Length: 170
Image (cartoon, rainbow, N blue to C red; front, side, top):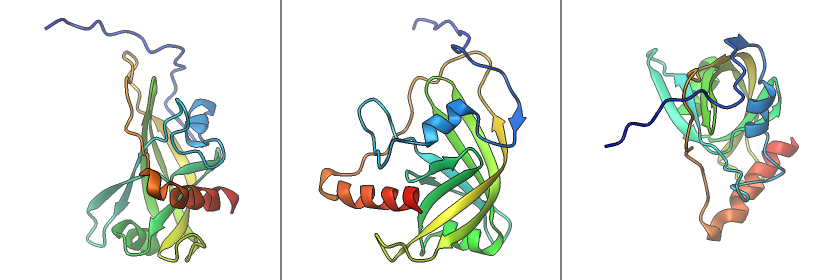
């Protein structure tokens, strides 16, 4: 087995925390209108963490997360989902995002339901996350080589595009 040499991530500006999304992170989460894995642009899966009623953490993957502004995220969530119940109860949320070649961030904020019944699906709600802190979790050396992306099956692609469009256009 050949050892890979660890290298400095290209063009990485080292930073610790900030109160809004830096431009490179914003561009990963602010996709072209209604884009779902268009060309080489992968729609990253964001891991959303909330707190259960017993105080224990709970995580769930979301492919609908979009950056609306550097201070505001939006996503669609099922009204039956644990994440929805947890956000309704206390609004605390943390979002982890990984994207090649050098984005690894944790985003902490407060969430609120802004649309309790989306037009595209009455069992989905629209959630806004007001960013309080963005923490850089990227190692100083190394490169993220791949990301987990979301692509809907072709037969329901228009359904997902409709959900994304509704989130973006609110």
